Image (cartoon, rainbow, N blue to C red; front, side, top):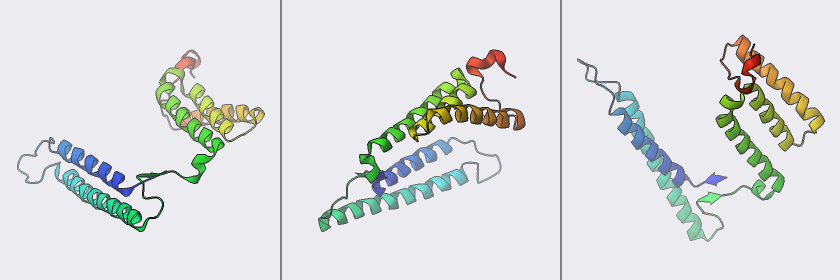
Length: 165
């Protein structure tokens, strides 16, 4: 999916405005003319200028396409794969499984969520279940071991809290 540059430019200008307003609340350092808001404020101004340039460019390109009578020139252009049902299912699975991970990992735990995550992705990629399930389980356990034991990242146990090692 391609969004017109005017949409991205408007989003950047809004982000720059919010950032600029936020950094104004940073406390001043006594005895210094330049405080902690100077650098983020300058970046917000630069981001706003870039957003304005992108916004104008998007409007100009859209007008040129319409004047030339060419197809397109819309605010949103969908890619060719968007008409393919298997691709749409794969994209939907990816979005849903990421939301499940985001909102469910604390309640279900990393091992359960990771296994479901990898299994669903392999299902969307048409990996046979006889291979997908063992791979999802083994890879989740290996990832858990690497992060939990070796890197000391505190992953949530969720449903498996009673057998946490």
